[in-house]
Image 1 (cartoon, helix red, strand yellow):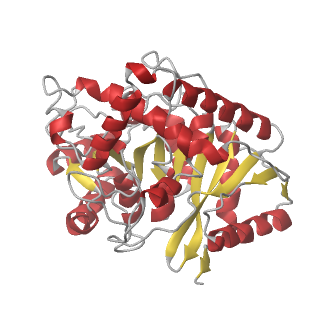
Image 2 (image 1 turned 120 degrees about the vertical axis):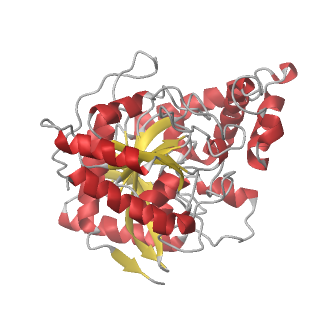
Length: 441
């Protein structure tokens, strides 16, 4: 039996046995079709860079012949007639797509609970939220259902579930990866990125999917990713007032090891405007999401969204509709764009002073399903991830340990287009926390 055939059979067995508990996959390809494709890949004399890897795809990314449902009743029967650019590139390098993954409906959510196909569960912490919106992507990798997954990140939608599920998640620089074939939430913020078990695998998948694409004018050309010699880097540490002090302490333990063992040094940084990132983000997302959903009127793509979507989706559509009214022209969206530009320039200034910024991925730990959580608490989940999207820089979440048996992730943030540096720094941190740090109090 070949490598891919063996891997696919193993993944299918796990999915059949345990997906009913995790609900990470909402569509799995036909088993006979998968085995046939696996055998064909195993028989190739010249194999691509993703040979041997089984990959899941968030259900807002188009894969020919599979449902791009966005985990919504609106598009539950929409079968994509084409491959997104990232999917074509994965197939060209012999990666095997196994199926479509659960997510918050239309990528609108923080916890993985808004899917029309039922909430995804967290394999790392049973009965706790997996984070959103790429909940199924992180849960599937964490559960071992696939080697890698694709997610999308608008304000933390890859990094938050990666942190909550104890895996690696990358939000590339804006324009680093083509968005062609992504059913977008916010055209000015969305990026497709990898979720993986470790930094090396995330780096490999990102290197395959990145690069310029004539069908997405925001993309730019970039060199092949490579591990750089990190040396004695300077980093800036960032938190927000809402951050759990135990997360700060665990992060400090890791960074203390880096300063002693790797001769890294911390430089105090003052990152302005981070306190208004959330207020800047939502007018942009609501307005752009409202605009994007006007095509879902029941005539071409499934059902009319206003008649079929869930509460969170409708709330954002309503907000975008209100902001877009003629009498509010220039009052919200244009001002939010102006502040986005200020945040972008502020990150450029600070990242000119240090090699990277290091910060918690989330200010809090994952909580139990059913916990009464305020809307302010939900907004705060993304307080440390949203700024990177607004600034268009690259960011990665990597697991550093556990607090009360719950995974903790930290972010490495680097300047736009500096993915090789970011990943190289993340690899060094990964070495420090392997064996992983356990903290129980």
